[in-house]
Amino acid sequence: MTDNGSDPLPRSQVFSLEPQVPTLVRVRRWAAQELADLSDDELGDVLLVVTELITNAFDHGQMPAQVRLQRSTQPCFVRIEDEDASPDRPTLGRSRLSDTRGRGLIIVDRLAKDWGVISHPVGKTVWAEITCETP
Image 1: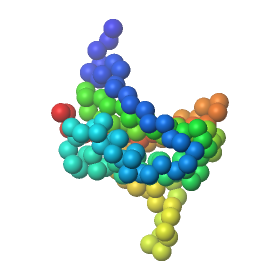
Image 2 (image 1 turned 90 degrees about the vertical axis):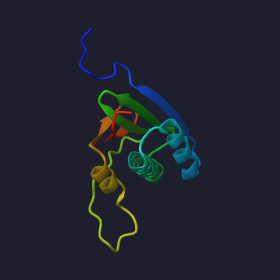
Image 3 (image 1 turned 90 degrees about the horizontal axis):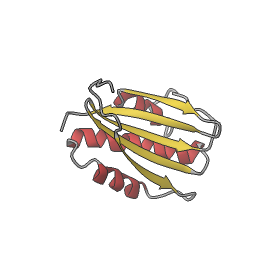
């Protein structure tokens, strides 16, 4: 076994999304409970990324879908994964001040240390990682 300084199996929690749009408050409350030991700023960033990824899943994805939170302490980061059944990959667009939509991945790109997409035989996973202070 090699010790590379990171958790061998980060703690993972899953929230399954229903075909009808859930209230974002419910999903955000779940994420906040799972990550209650983060600082207010870190938790705010995570909740905003969770909101944007879920919104994209309902706007552009296909059911079934789920959100997964993984937490690592060494180094400290939170990985948010949104998995849905659509093969369509999200694109990082450009947004203008007059636009009322289209800022989701721009926000994710600005807040996350890194983000990306993993294609599956059916669907995809859009993920983002937010760094945090070691608790």
